[in-house]
Length: 70
Image (cartoon, rainbow, N blue to C red):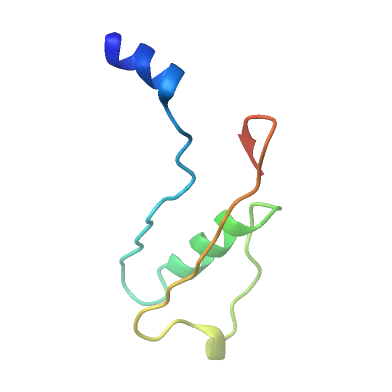
């Protein structure tokens, strides 16, 4: 409990997350990432030419307001 009390007094909000998606081709990895980043919580159709080949790194800084991620 002492640790939790000290965190609430001296702690800082961590707004960074490292998120890996791993899976078979066309299993929805890119769609999941795009939906998480969308303000509407959904992803549109992904054309065959837009599919990820190899590794894709997408930086994202969600907006924080009123104590909630937006």
